[in-house]
Image 1: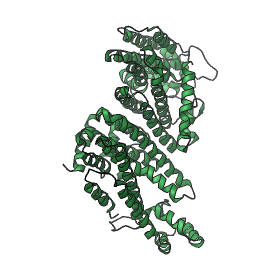
Image 2: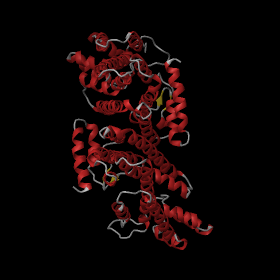
Image 3: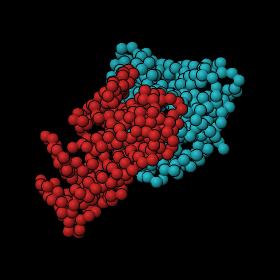
Image 4: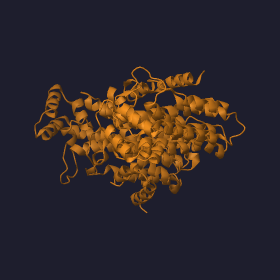
Length: 315
Length: 315
């Protein structure tokens, strides 16, 4: 069975144990909204790559998906988002209290799933998982704090998205290496691969918001700029702008001008924002490739292809 | 060092690792508001009772205290409480988002502490902990749902407070037995002891709200009735009342009569609520004692004394 279909099947099976209490309804709802299931797919692929037992790893694959969705449930409250994958968020469909509590339960479910992997791997997995999970909270805190701040530096932003996005991707690769009984050194290399790929992925996400390669019906170009979100093109623009340009950017982003995205894009073109952002993405993608060097004895073709595919999104 | 002082010292030491990020400020704040530290004390006492290594158990003692405080941080949001131990709650002092996120981080910290106990105990501890934690969420969900409901039965209420309060107390005793290398049978008995003691304790809490043994300055008698909280005296009153009394109770509790607590107490006296509540508490206390029978080879004097002390509160 292909990765995504397998995850869907296992998730459906898993959720059946939780039909006895109303607490779990929002959890099934959110998990059934779909999604690309990238994290569990990465984890299972990595297990396979290193010759581990994919079936034994399945609970951990589900754990990362449940955990990821827990973060979505709570982030949606904090970000006051009313839609998730085009459907009402949990706190909209139920209420904030339900979203807090069911989110808490999801985190526990994730830990409970880890119980189900072979006991010899549990200490290493728990350790890596806990570290990752705390970083993720730090990243979310920074993300919220950055919204209140006037200025955010590029290194600060990179650190934030690393914690908010990359560490979980990194964990999925690392966990595959742990379950594949590899050396600490290989675990570290594949983790770094994941971190850098995650960064490239998130930066690309920021990039595509402003420079989509194709335009789907109804897709808004420059949503981040409209929401004054300090995404990477904006931070690069400020970093490279002269004083006059900087002032123009500040005044445009804070204006109600309906053409402000177009006007900002013109300014960004003067500054070379698109090329600079592309270069940064390419750098992190290259860093991720470099992290793979020194991993010997396994066929890296698949993982390299996966990374390329991940980056080939159009919007 | 006496139990509570030891916990305070270890907690202070523990929190020092978390001064690098603003995410952890509300956590230190809440944990430094004090509290009786009943749960970690129970856990360490139980470890000692069964001849386990108290020092090795310390991270787990901290874990239960951190976890308990995580539930307080999130419950305070859900219950819209503005004070905790006489001080502003986290969502009041910071905001709801901070309380959600720092609460999430606390749950992870609790799990991270479990990492620090000897590895051979981890699988059993994780298993018991996860089960307990999910029950606790179910209990909180029921508690919220019961507030919206017209009628709640006594068994439903007992099930709710068991999940919301007793399972964590039960876990603390059980964990002590696990770390003391006892048999599964003893772990189960001491767990049941904790569950029944926890129920007696929570029922006594409800009882003392209406029938305090001493009155401290400023302490409101019958706060639960004023807030229409379906605590056990109220549920017992409805269960034993005739139709006329039932109607009077309903109309009084929904009235704005400033003497409604006194009037309800008079009605309750007719029905024998106080005696019936006392009998129920005594029953659970007896059940907890009974659970201890069959635990041999250890001196149960201390634990019995602890249980008596726990129940000897005056308000």
